[in-house]
Image (tube, rainbow, N blue to C red; front, side, top):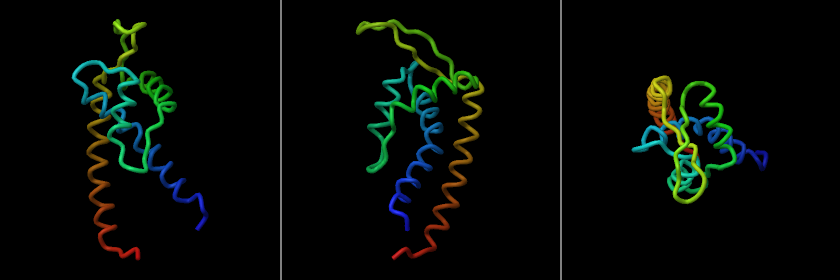
Length: 120
């Protein structure tokens, strides 16, 4: 097995799930949420061995906004300049709902397959 294969698998899974967890984090916020807070929440909740790189977040948020999934507003801050905060659009909510349903179906299927093998 190539020595970097576990890292490649982790990267591929991370890229595939990053959009889902970012949209879910925005949806779960009680009010518009800024990028640093999204990254902090994801870093705090990441399982051991997985990380969420903040450098990938801002380009992702720009793309999500261009695709109409999120909307940004500038919110004044007592701690410095105004912060760009994000909320889901109606399209973002529809995409997230579809993605969650797909994730749950896929997760059940993968867990069923994995439950049937012995990797020792």
